[in-house]
Length: 361
Image (cartoon, rainbow, N blue to C red; front, side, top):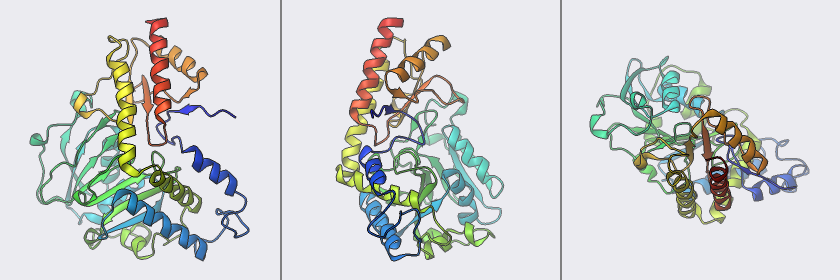
């Protein structure tokens, strides 16, 4: 078997050592006589697995003790709907900064439950940059300020936590979590679907300051209450146990590889190689994002016409480079360079790009 380099934006490539361990343990896990996907989440063995996954994630991201860590069913879009329910009082405004598709999605999920104030919007400029901070129209009485740390589709990334004063800052880190060191204490809450850097699709991580959990929020069912999930160690209902298990293995792999510091270096190296190939192509390839806001995780790029794009996709797939098609919202091409993508994969893409230009440029 030969594994290709998978540039999918999500569900995304997973570390091969993790997949091989999952394969080896699929029928019988940890000496219990059954698969991890078959045992009770209330069993001592699974409770130990869950506690170890949380401890490893805390270590990986240097999460302070005054933050709860939740492992929840679903993905980031579900969390976007839960944020105003848990953290905004009835009728209270919430501020949103929109830098791409997923910022717009977050607003759609929030609007039924909160008065949304769009404080800055990059859409008029085609989502090619982050709107300058000095132009944001922040409400000091807002329940929170929401940003999308990295826009998976448009390839726009915050390189630091913006200063929003005393209002709690909440960030969607789905496509950049654990890709470099961040100061968690600068955020009131961080959430992420796991299927980019942390594990398989179907489980989300919410990292939330405990004092924020004390907010009354709005009337909601117990299953939609972050406080209830925190009180039950993310086992208020049956959790996605297999996904949690694979997430734990992935986090342990990241620690064994040197942690977020090591991945920050690798991710900077990988993205620099691809951007250099684009910038040196004389316009054959183009990336339209302002250099200061370019994503390290997701690189959208374009060829001169659709015929060349279709040819690039066919030839790259034949060369063992998978899932380079751009999102339908923007078209073109996109390379996702998450933690599990090795430097060799990025270099293989660069080599192919140069060869393709020589043959078709």
